[in-house]
Length: 251
Image 1 (cartoon, rainbow, N blue to C red):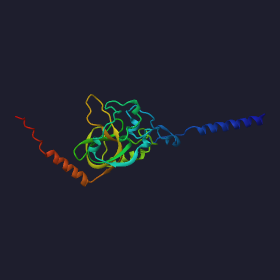
Image 2: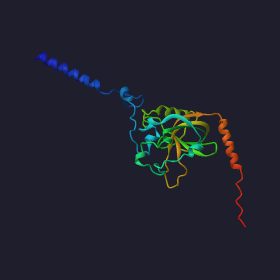
Image 3: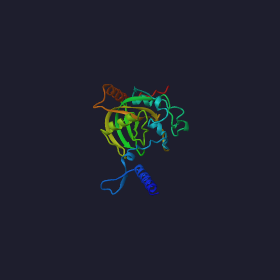
Image 4: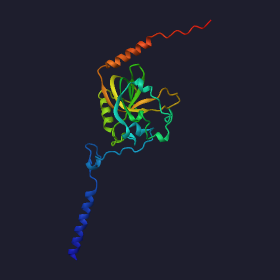
């Protein structure tokens, strides 16, 4: 009986040791008096959002089911040409139909564009985006937005997650936007995915609300290219032309 009791005690102690080994380890943060879960648990990445209450969030971050259909070959264009693109009838200015929440409006939202622009202003938005105002050679403006590349905002499995992160880093090398809109003077070549934004508030929306969202690349330029400068000169010359005189009424 004594031998059996000893054997049962050994088995019991072994089980307790195994259970303790399976528990997460904790370590004290230096100077904090608090404990944190051990390395294995701490390194687990935050879960990417599968859905969001924000309007068309998966499309904005290229994390949507249609993202794999995007033509990744950049099309060289201008702010002026993008502003002329027709807005899809299925995307009203002030509301998003449920069918379009997680899907793209082709061909624009399935395309990547490259434009040369002046950077006018930037702001860190409540949703983590950088909102940046761009100006083309003619003086017309549009917006680009740059999502926070962290997994809580952009699905890390997105085909474009790496480029979205690199673009933010490229922008941060020159500017660090905060919650207040500020002038941001620079000249750059921007590459991003076409996106039709929506209007909020009572003001009547103007234009097609085209954006580059998300941005995939920011290339800072020391000065405007010859082509951009020539377009700007032509636009200024056109502005200086006197308006045609009104027709005289017939006698």
